[in-house]
Length: 553
Image 1: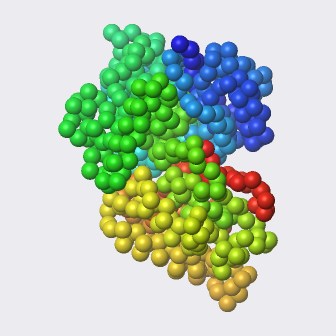
Image 2 (image 1 turned 90 degrees about the horizontal axis):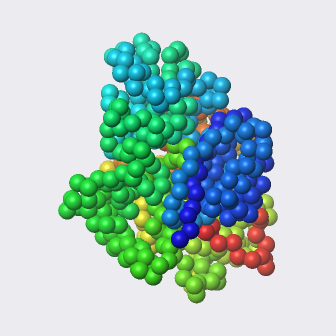
Image 3 (image 1 turned 180 degrees about the horizontal axis):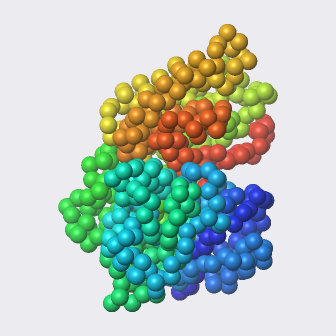
C-alpha cells in the first residue's frame, strides 16, 4: 500500500507579489502529483500538502529556492491514505483570518518559548495563559489553567481581548500573557495583536501544542485530553499518538466515546451537538451519503464525501479545507452540460452573487455565462425582458430572472446548510429582513455609492439612513454569530453582498464604524470557502463557447 507524506507549513513574510506566485506554485504541485491547499497572502504562506515523499520534498525545495521562503519550517506525518482529493493554491487577504489590518507578525510577534521551558512559564501564577483556538477545539483538551475565550472563529479574538482588557477582565492591567495554539500560526498573529495594544510581555509556545506533545514526556506534561488536528486523525495525544475522537460527518464536531454512545448519535447523520437541527429531507440526504460512503468502502474506492472536515476549522499551520461547505455533488457519468440550467451572471453584481451563493450551497450545477453589462449577449435579451443578471434558464425552458427566486429554487431542491431553517424567528422573518435590504437600504446604498446620479439627494443623509439600518444588523450579531442564530441562513447570504458593497464605498470609514460584530460577520463571510468559490473570474461568454460548469469541480 502506498505511503503518503503530509507536510504542514506556514511562514509570515512580506510577499507584495503573492498573486504572481499562484500559477507557478500550482504548476509545481501538479507536476509532482501533490494535493492539498496552500494559501498565499501579502503576509506570507500557510498550508498543508500531501503526496509521495519525493513529490512533497520537491515542492518544499522549490519554495525554499526563493530566499524569502528559506526560513520555512514544516511538520511531517506519514499516512496510509491520501487526505486530499485535489490541489488548490488560493489567494487570500490573510493566511489566517483575524480581520485586523496593519498587523505584522513577521516583525512584531511575541517571544517564543521552547516546549521544554513552557511548564515553568505557565506554572507562574502571575502569567495569564490563553488558549487561542476555537471553542470546539478547547473542549477536547488544553493546558491546565488555560483561559478559554469561547471563540467560534479567530476573527472573534480581538473583540474578546477588548472586553477582557476592561476593568475586571483577565487582561486588565496588561499582565504577562502566554498564548498557545495547535501549530503556532494563530499565536504569531495574536501575540502581535496584543503587542499592538500595549502589552509588553507576551509569550507563545514555539511549535504549538503539537511540538509540546511530541517533545515533553507525558509524566512531566501539563496537558490534559486530546489535541484536535485538521486531518483524518481528528485528534492526537502525547507522543502524537492517535487520539480518541471521531468526526460527526453531519456537523463535523469531534466526538468522544461518550458522545458516540449517545442515543442521538447516528453515524454520518447526527450527534448530540446537531441532533434536532436538521430537516427530515436533510437527514435523508445525510443517510444516503453515509450509505454511499459505506458502499464505496466495500468496493475499495474513495468517496469524496468522506473527506469532510470539522465545522469552522481553518488551519493552524495546516490549511486544509474545513469551513462548513455543501457536500461535494455527485455528478452522474451520463450528465452533460446540455442537461443543466444556464445562469447568466456578472461577477461583481450583488444580485448575481447571491444567486451563485445559493446554487453553490445547494450543489445545483449549471452552465455559467459571464456577462459584460455594457455588451449583453442576444441570448440573454431573448431569455428575459429585463435583460440584466442574474437570469437562470432551466432545461425545460422556464426562466427565473429574479435573484431571490433563483435562491429559493435552488434551496428548495437541496438545502444542506439549513439556510431556510432559521434558529431564531421564522422563514417569513428572513424574507422580511431581506426586503428591508432590497428596499430602503439599497436605496440609501445607491445614493451613497453613486452621488452624481442623484444630485437632489444629500449623501450625508443617505449615509445616516444606511448606518441606522446596519446598526440593526449589528444588534442581531451582538447576540449571535449570524443574523438568525448560530448558522448562516438565506438572510445572511442575500444581504452580505450588499453590505460588502457598502463597505467598499469608504473602507476607512467602514473600519472606523460603530459595528464591530457586523465587520466581523462580513470578514468571516468574505474569508469563507463558499464566497471564494463563487467569485472566480471568467471570460465574457460568447455564442459558440464551450460550456463553463458552475460551481467548479
